[in-house]
Amino acid sequence: MDLTQLTYFKAIVEAGSITKAADRVHVPQPYLSNQLKNMEHALGVKLAIRSTRKFQLTDAGRRFFERATQILELMDTTSKELESYEAGLQGTLKVGTISTSAAILLSDSIRKFHEKYPDVKFEIRNMVTQKIQESLKIGTIELGIIRTPFNTDDYDSFNLPKQPMVAIQNTEYESNENIIRLSELSKKPLLVNYRFESIIIDAFHSAGFEPNILCKIDDTRLILLCSNSGMGTAIIPKDWVNILPGLNLYYREITAPTLETSSAVIWAKNHTLSSVARNFLDTFKQ
Image (cartoon, rainbow, N blue to C red; front, side, top):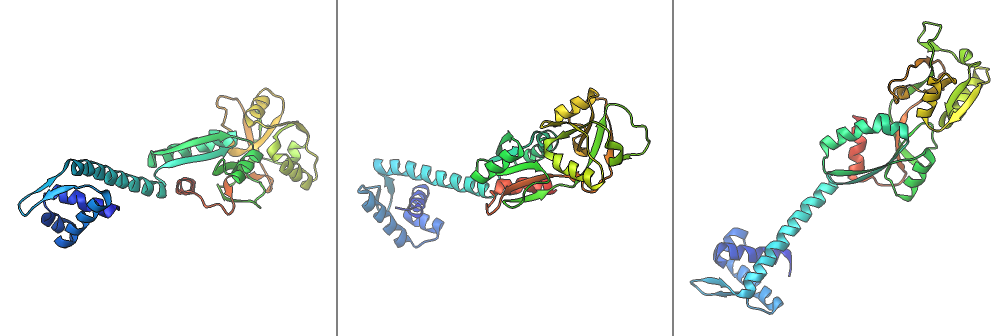
């Protein structure tokens, strides 16, 4: 018994005769009649009483018609669902993200993606970069959103445009320039994110200065709050400046070519991304 035979039987019942059904499904009448006999033989029951004048279903035939209709409808629905999954129209996207990216970047991207793919569901987890990378390797998430720099050996990535680092403080700068040099920052107490400590130190050393790092903090929101209180000058990526609205802070771009960073969407190398994940990446690329 296969789906083609179920289709033939449904056509016979709906047409009311084998002859009319044969025209509908475009097969010879003797062949269709033979298929009906094969179904009855396989099921071990009489499905219909047929003569030259009439075609009448038996009780077993009526029950079989109900089931055949249900099966064919289920297969059609399943086929359409699988096509949707293949096209990335349905499914669940699992993403790990650092908290700042969730606040600045991810929320807007999810909104745009949801407008286009309303049937896709999300599982979003705030994680530190190391945890994101570990989760990608074991497959508990499919995409990660982190900041550069990172070890690219085990991950493919798509990087968003680079952002300069800025120096933020709660008092106005004396200079009217929109930039600040490392020499001007060398004596200031600095508040930095652990994530960028090494590139900040390297930049100062390359310029011939030793940075005065007062505090290293994981959470950029706390860095901004500390800077707002007057504790020191924060060094963060420019696109993180407004993650806490309402603060009275002033910033200048730092003139150091190595103090640039960007958000990156990463995934495990040698991993074939789902259609949902590929569609989500397209949201960033657009």
